[in-house]
Structure formats: C-alpha cells, structure tokens
Length: 348
Image (cartoon, rainbow, N blue to C red):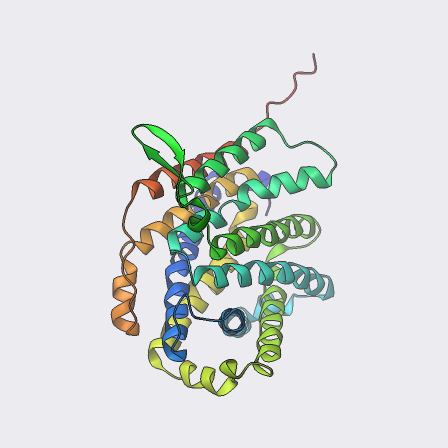
C-alpha cells in the first residue's frame, strides 16, 4: 500500500514501527562492536595490532553469518512471502545486496576502531549524500537546502571526530587534527556512498515491484558475497584459518549475541522497514531514519558494560561529551535540513 492510500491509523502504526526499526539498528552498533572485540580477544590482537586482512576477514565472516541466519529465519517464519518471490525480485534484491554488503563491510571494519556512537552519526550522512548523488545523476545541481545541509554535516563531523575544538569561545583547528581523523572514520564515511546506492536502487525497483519481496534475495546476496570474501582470505592468510573461527562461533557468549543481532536488527528491522515505509512519504520516512544515530549513542552509553560482563571483553560505556552533543546535533540538523521540502512554484 502506498502512502496515498494509507489511513491515519496505518500511518501512525508505520511511524511507531519505523522508530522501533531505528532503535534496533541503533542497538546493532554496540553489538557489532562487542562481536569485533570478541574476535580480537580470540585471536590475541588489539585495535592497533590487528592486520587489514584479519579486519576484512572478520567483517565478512560476521556479515555472512548474520545474513545467512537472517535468510534462514525469513524462509522459516515468512514462507508465504518467500513463495511470492519471482526472478525480477531476485535480480533487484541481488543488486541491492551488493551495495548493502560493500557499505556494511566498510562500516564493520571501521567500527572495530571507532566508538559506536561516532559510527552511527557518520553513517547517518547517507541522508545528505543520497539526494546529492541523485541530483548529480540527473545532471542537476543539488537544492540549496541540501548544499547547506552538507556544509553543516562537514562541521558536525569535524566536531564529532575532534578535528576542530572550541577554546575560549573560539573555533579552532585541533593541534593534533591529522591524528584525530582515523582510518575507521574514512572507511565508515566511504561506506555511506554504498548505502546511498542501496537506497537509490530500492527507490528505483520499489516503483516497479513489491519491495518486501527484495528482502530474501538481498539477505542471500549479502551472505554469499561475505562468505566468498571470507573464504578467499582464509586461503593465503594463516591467521584467518577457518578452524579458529569455528571455535569462536561455538562459544555461547558469541552465538547468543549473534542470534540477537540476526533476529532483531536484521530480520525484524528489514521486514518492518519494507512493510511499513510505503505507508509514509519518502521524506517522512527519511526524517524518522535520522533517529538511528541517536539510538546508537543512547545504546552505547549503557549497554557496553552489560555486554562486557556477558562476553568477557573490556568494553566500557561511552561517555556523554560536548563534541558528541555539538557534532551530533549538527549532523542531525544537517540531515533534517537536507530533507526539508522544496517550496512548490505558484506558476506565476
């Protein structure tokens, strides 16, 4: 059902559902961070000593398990929906899955070295990047609101990552600015380009087909690509041998946390997104999606301590800070500004 045919009650249900979707996605940031820490602990490495091979292999392995299990749950719990999938849905879901995997791979690798709240706000830049890419593909200049939002987003990210600081009411470039921006920040920001591509593909294919039917193919493609990359890296790099990963996967502290990640932020969240988003306008849904970094920051301030006890890793709660408040607020304001509706011409 499209937003034009939705009743007020259905729209309210959609708003509540999408807010819960963002809450689940926000929770995935500290959960993935904790899983990354378990990998580091299992292989005896740290954030600074882990090789790029291990980071890529770890991210692909986690993504592959997450979405292979999510696909299996979809097939079991939503058999009726799966039976309605046809080849056009498979190809559309596969294209979406490629973009989603690449974005998620970069995000998960980056999350191993930056705080969950920071990752959430950087990922939210997709709200600004998507309309900019869309207008450029149409060979048009972005709207003024989008360009102003982009400038605010740059200021927000610079504050969030410590590139700029406030000293005696002055805004200054940090003396250690070159070391404040990390590889994790770069990878996460690059990942938003692929997430933008995913959103644009959903928009294109969603106008032709029922979007919920893309979900199983998207899950399957993401899992297959992740496992192919993981298997490819397992051959030449001894530290990523399959045996080491198997022993980690059999530990209750790992697979129970993975099960939570597979069910709520993966299966439930994506099914609800595809089911309820069409009841709202694209602009309304996009504004709701800006809640994700707020939830990520909130979860990151109290769940890590609980997760660290369960998973036997050192993962302290993130602390509230002025850079997080100011930088995060600027990013959120930039997102809302980029989504501000354009004034319609009166024709005069």
